[in-house]
Image 1 (cartoon, rainbow, N blue to C red):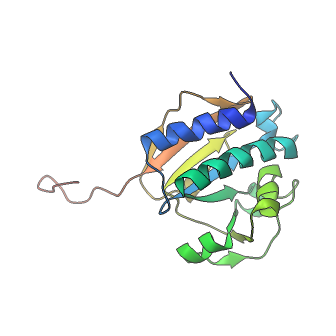
Image 2 (tube, rainbow, N blue to C red; image 1 turned 180 degrees about the vertical axis):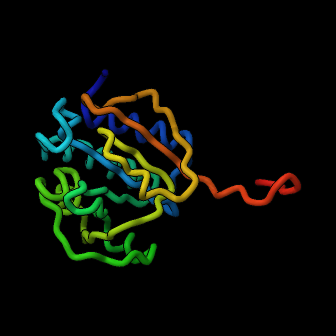
Image 3 (cartoon, rainbow, N blue to C red; image 1 turned 180 degrees about the horizontal axis):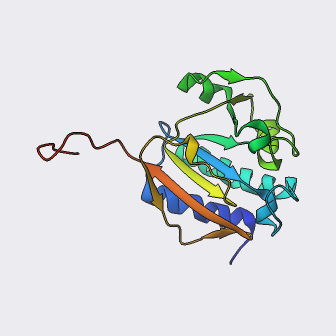
Length: 179
């Protein structure tokens, strides 16, 4: 494992961008257990400092590439998602009424809620790509056909990292032609 949490997060996101050219039309969902990042069991040691480093790296790359971000809350908020109001309006997701806190929503979602310009929560989305830091199970928020991506940087801190992109369904049969 090399580098800081910030640097490791950037490496992971950059490897996703190499596999799938994320831009302004794409929505990236992020699931994070800051507890797992610092080597504790999920939900047992959330860290605002870890959340700040991850958020900072993601926002920097978001500004560079233009993609939209959504942060998944923990199961105590039914895995609702924090995003900017502009993203929620762009995708026409219905807003839900709750404020994530570290013990109900998770440190990462709580941090994102307080550091986005105009935060809202939505119940469910269909994202184009995902990064799961600490095995938080973000697959429910992806479009139907998910394709796993294997990053070179497979950990952020002590947390296991998985990623996925999506593609359109292949419909038809033997005579179908695909793009």
